[in-house]
Amino acid sequence: MTTFKKLNIVVLAGGISHERDVSLRSGRRVAEELQAAGHTVTLRDPDASLLAALTENTPDVVWPALHGASGEDGALQALLRARGIRYVGSHPEGAGLAWFKPTAKALVSRAGIATPDWLALPNQTFRELGANGVLAEILHGIGAPAVVKPAQGGSAQGVTIVTDAADLPRAMVDAYTYSDVALIEKKIDGTELAITVMDSGHGPVALPAVEIVPLSDVYSFEARYNAGETTFYAPARVSEEVAVRAAEVAVQVHRLLGLRHLSRVDVIVDAEGVVWFLEANMLPGLTETSLVPQAIEAAGLTLSSAYSALAVTAAGE
Image (cartoon, rainbow, N blue to C red; front, side, top):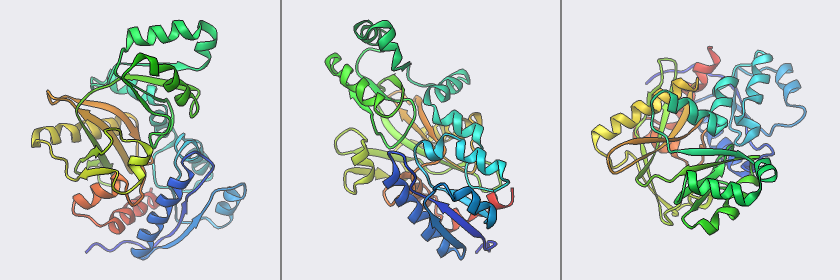
């Protein structure tokens, strides 16, 4: 058994985003696993006193388990780096690229990786050009079925699958509730996979893909975090060829976006075996129903050893 250096770790969870409750659940799970590995762990909710407290009593490493803008847009990472505080997760630049989905899709597409056709529209577009005209162009350019989602954010909040043109206006409103920019994608039918990429100091490695089969056919917020709403298969029920291709795409995306330590890349595999990139998560959920823990266990690892290895790697960088 590998022996890890015992660290003083601060896990950040909570925050003020729409995903606060999910973050608290992720943070508790991470803290428990790190404690089980023998580390000294403090779990705290970020507030106005956080940076001063970290400066006065600097831990060996910080593990941000914050979801939404408060943890994933790169701002927190930039401040930690400016303070010289080591942390688990991507650098600010990579975080920002993954956080804004249209930018991630553009970079991935330019590299030759398939991603569904899309439009990214700020909400002021409707005021400047008129709602009816803009909606007509969306239907002409993307058509239905389509997936409408906030350009930033996670946990499927504000996401709608539009199969009828009459439902598009409401879907846009829902997306704009969570972001000033909406992303409209062509819907791809196929097998939905989530691939965890982990790098504990020896280069990024894709763990076994997790196949997602929601009972309602939509991997909604409720399907993600309510036990029994979704069936998961880890490893995924795909051919070895498809599994290898999906893993290669995930690692390539991780590198392209400049991600670090841990990421989750979501894809759809269509009937022809084409792997379509959907989005990358630089700070994926780590709750009891989340995908990353399932992938770690499918790889034959324990959560405590995997999380400990990531913390030790971050502390040494």
